[in-house]
Length: 88
Image (cartoon, rainbow, N blue to C red; front, side):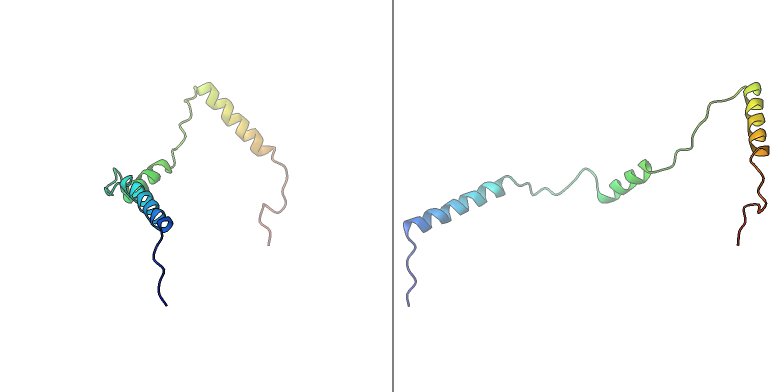
């Protein structure tokens, strides 16, 4: 059994494949250096994911007294609970 010789259509197809491959490879950059590394990205994520404590605005003594008064009234008017919140 003999292998048939490639015809003109086969040659054109191989040449087309090679030229497509060459055009794809020529667009690639072999420089794998990046401005940031994986560890830099992890550090940036930790900084962005940190808890930032709220900074409430300051109160005058009168506003603070009213706030304390409201909190005490709410505590006294919370209702009667026989079980003190602990249930077995």
